[in-house]
Length: 52
Length: 144
Image (cartoon, rainbow over all chains, first blue to last red; front, side, top):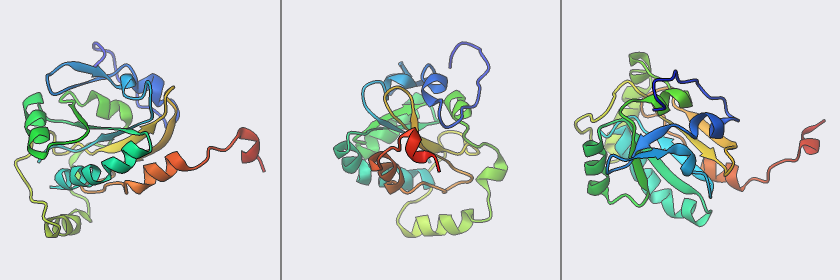
């Protein structure tokens, strides 16, 4: 969710630069930059299908 | 039901990731209210984020389309998942959006990744842990 810019698909090695500025929402609805997840420690980020 | 099973598996594995120093975060595709209810019902020990826009899914290269939702193996996987006690609930998110995972090191290097080809195709949580714990090879060692 970076403005209206088109989203490029990342390769395996440039995750930090390509995904780091994108945001998802926390449970209060506040945007969280994905890069903050792995800024200080290794991060396993798992995308699930839906909540059903 | 696949999502419920995968999240239950991640809850079980969370202490091992935590012990290894790996921060676990799950991203779903429903609304904030749906994500909040899902997290509260399960008392998730890790962060749950949500991306109704699907832009992070798209950028991460996750598969999408009905052909990925109804693959040849999906019915057998559904039966196995149901047999393990995970029932299908109301779909809260995008049904034809598949998931995946990245293990990212500080600095942004990707150590391991998985992109699901179809519904219910989850990674073995041991895989990213093994990838993290495996010694990284220096460039000279990789040469023949």
